[in-house]
Length: 240
Length: 240
DNA sequence: CCTTGTGAATCTATTCACAGCG
DNA sequence: CGCTGTGAATAGATTCACAAGG
Image (cartoon, rainbow over the protein chains, first blue to last red):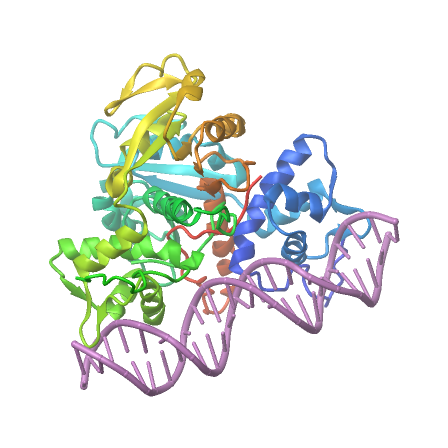
């Protein structure tokens, strides 16, 4: 669609705000569902309805990647998916190491969301001798003492108990991991250049209970506060 | 510590912004860790360092709950925990139903973050006959066809495969659940008065890979973009 | 005529900076 | 003094509203 001429700016020169970074994968998912349903063209209005956001927001978000829409028509579903995937490095293949192969770790490794989008689990670690040596999918679980030999992995997932999480994070960082996804209910401390995100059941439940409670209290009348609409992985800021 | 006098305003009249709602449980967790370590008084500066945020933000967040600090000294750790807990309805007991008892569901039910903070799993459902009837902790898994008999549960957790998630969400809402936490990689549609939050591995990984990629590209020099610091469960807005 | 793409307006959140109190 | 609590300033995100393109 674009024939990048020498000297012209790349298709995507702009800086993308964090809020948008979190929404784009959501659009991508919806687009995938639409495409599977045979929808080859989609308007910002439709996409917005599916994502439960404002249509202007969808357009602004998408416009940050480039001008991929056709006025009067909308966006080409497949093409838009490809553009988002490209921006998110889904064309690259990412090796991921998962540490802590309990129920959670196993669930993560087998999860639908993992295999898709170019994420490949290349190493699994646990400390439990009864787990070490077993296979989860095509990968065999190694003992955590083998972690120092890990190479070429940029993304690490921590799914250990809270008590072990910091130690594991340190080990992953030491071996060159640059991005961590922490499922342990513990604030981690990592060097400032390591990207750290948390997924935390307990905090999610507390947020739900906060709004639930607010509602029961306030709604002696009827006006539900219904927070922003809440959802799909936002991204505040925290760390150890 | 406070002796509420008749006629005076409640300790917490102000409206709490969503961004703050997501951070408060993080502070609560840190405070708990500090308290266990014997720290009985904490300054906004210390708390901010632990949470990787600005100290002014910590103070503003906490001030929304009331004036609980002592100038020149800081905050009383235990008291602050109690105040946050109260604001989050952790004094109440919340019944939670979990649907989808695969590895993920089992991991969630057994997770450390669940039992703490007054969340009590009171019902488990699955569709797999080989899982129905088994016990996870003190609760026995029921068949999803039993869901319509569910009563008194306000919070539901969806940990089914994506294909079943919408149906399960509908069933939960039908039976009076007001807040949903969805782990299935699928955008859900619920009535506007139902609070919905997503926890999504795939999207988290994509966000990591986005920033990772940005870094490798930009850092021909050295300036790492290091996003906002990223972390601990934010809360944007999405839905079906 | 319909839908994008985007400046301008608005709303929300963060950070600064300091008065006020223990 | 030191640290909280908070107005005022700044930065960021969302929404509006419309010109421009197919």
